[in-house]
Length: 406
Image: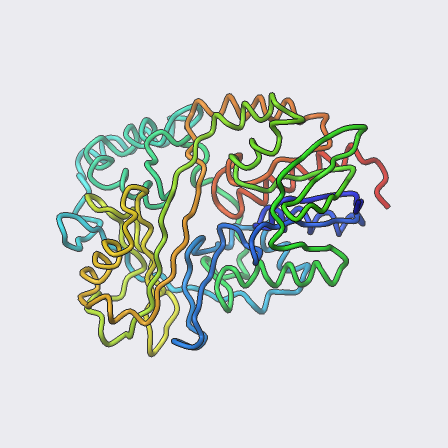
């Protein structure tokens, strides 16, 4: 049995962030990741035999200079040279089979009448629909903003807690407002993992965990290939449903609370095409209204003389690959045979509701004195920075239990 101070299950940005904190504190650390690469919902794709170094995203698309936790990790690992500023082409609205201006969806009179409530209305315990209907007016919310929020969250956002969206944060003025990394967002995940390995963190990819037990103040983990690991402390940096399954044996009360959080399925399809063949104007993205997709995110924010890339985030019930590809081709004004390549990823996202805030508060209370951290995109919000803020807080909680670490 292999023993360490900290076992981390999950190699997405949350798990990588926890590994960074642990190695800084001098803890022996292992990361178990079920897939072949780290990154989780950060997923950059390319096919060099078709389009060389051209890439596109099938998961998270951007970082911002308000992501202070991410930037601190990047700086400590000396990865600032990978930061690549993004331009901001305009977004469009797709309705009734046509691209339209976002501004044309706004009901200005009702918006201006409702907007003063922005300065007095609290988001606390309000859903996205309840809060933004009051500060924008029902007409503008129904016509535009509900679809914009669906696009941001890649799910029906009506019941999502309003205070988990768009937090105000200090900005790093020496960094571009919006950025990616030289070979896409997953570039930073891979580079961070490589740096952490050099610093002594051990990574085990393609290592699914099938059993978790806690006894005699030790965690014991069994993997699909029947290896066993043990540790003083454990971090679950997994989707919430995976965390619930793993905790069901030793922590059934936590597992029950976690199972109250439902998941939303998103079918993400990215295509690379020749630039001169596409009729679609340069866009940052497209918000879907009465369409089978929540959003289309374009690679037009980085100039390429030869190719364009677009990723369609389709709703769960629109999952026929041929139908997806035909819709993409129709929107681009080409045939599916003109795709240079396409790639797919099924993303699972937490579908939080205001009622789940009570569940999360109970989870936090139960974790208080346990040597167990739960991190991911179902606590503070779904952004990369939300995940890393949660990670720092959980590490500090565990650190208080550890006493002297060195």
